[in-house]
Image (cartoon, rainbow, N blue to C red; front, side, top):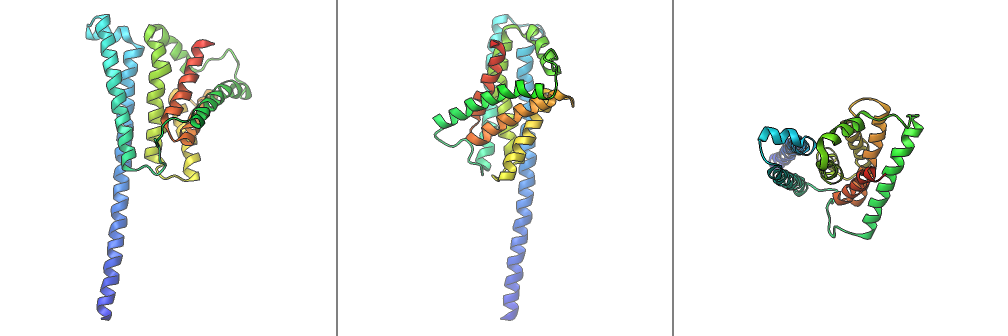
Length: 250
């Protein structure tokens, strides 16, 4: 009996060990897969940006009419966004400890948070440069590049910056970033996720360790806070869209 009892204990311990090993393997495979999804999403975003920011060049290369090009842009944009959202929801279907994207999707409270986020974005864009002593006449490399691109993009520039870019950037930097690197809902993951995803957002917009990086970093952190607080990308997208639209109104 004693040998049988010992055998059962060893058997149970082996099962637990195999389960732990298997769980770690699955976790590593999931992280790797999600990193691939992030890479694919960036690639999709880059392709869409090319169409909007360099319309004349792309049109000449493809040798299509202006009307045909507009149709192409619409089709590629819709398909890219649908694929992006599909990949995001596929991640949530596999693991969603945060309960992101819960129903009902719209509420007054979360709309208020999105508006607060927009106000914080606006304040941060004015206050942080002043605190850092950045001259009001100084322009970030990202903004100078956008100014140059705006002349090439023509009528495609505004819809890209105000609508398309926030959809892609919020899905990638907030949605997919948390799904990949901060899967479990903890206080530590919340604030680490906001700070690190904010830095990733800032560095992509200003890939130089200049004072402007802190400005974009703070903007990314605000958007991360909106996403985590509302647990729905629609609201960080709304804050982002309102902030980007403000630049064309003032």
